[in-house]
Every structure is written in C-alpha cells, then in structure tokens.
Image (cartoon, rainbow, N blue to C red; front, side):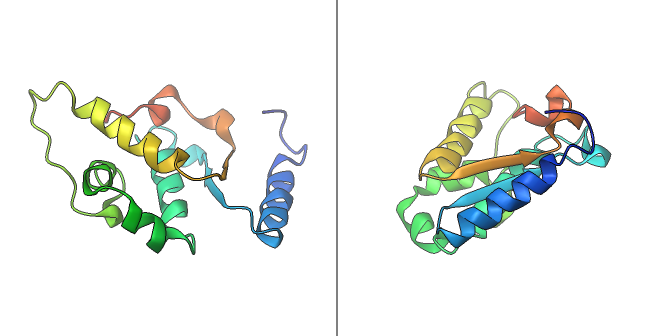
Amino acid sequence: MGDAWLGKTRLLDELRQHNQDHSITTISAHGYRAERELPYGVVSQLLASLVGLSVWPAFERETSELVLSEAARIHPVLGVPTPVSDGDVLGETRLYDAVLKLLTATPKVRMVDDINGLTARRWRFSPT
C-alpha cells in the first residue's frame, strides 16, 4: 500500500519477472477499481493464475475432487461446482477451506496489485 505513482506495480512486475527467471512459482491478481464490488474477484484471479501454471496438471491430479468442485463455485474451470442449498450452513466453510487448500498447497508467491481499491466484499467468500 502507498500513494499513487510510487512504482508499486513496477516493483511487482520486476518481482514477477525475477521469480519467473528463477523458477519461483508465482500467482497474482489485480484489484481493479471497476470491479471493486464484484464478489470473489481477486480470489477468482488467483485461482485462474494457479490454473495457468505449468505445474497445474500434476497439482490437479494430486488434489481431491471435493476441493476442486468446491473451488469451482468461484472459478468454474476447476470442475463441476458443488451445488449448495439455502440451508447448507457449512457451504461457505467448505468453500473457504477448498480455496485455502488450493492457494497454500504448494510453495509460491501470491501477489495482489492495487489492493487499496478493494472493498471488504471482494475478500469475502460469500456473494452477499
């Protein structure tokens, strides 16, 4: 976080390139101001970045179907989303656990640019 035009994005770009040059797994997202009220936006971008990695096919094979189907509620390319009923009080917990497992399972750098424009809703695992 910091004032505009300090070079934060440039710094992240340099870090991303350094990580790529040194085979350090990196996933990233951007907190676009135009999407500031969109639920799951940053989380969806991080999941998309994960799926785009060259190690994804092996990682996907090692990940349980339950984790993938829960996370598919946010990013459908992960599989068939788990249906959730209105009375399912653990649905949000399962979703949170699945996304957390995916984003923390392997050593990687996680970067989010322009985080200061995001509302709390962007970080919640609930569409409300």
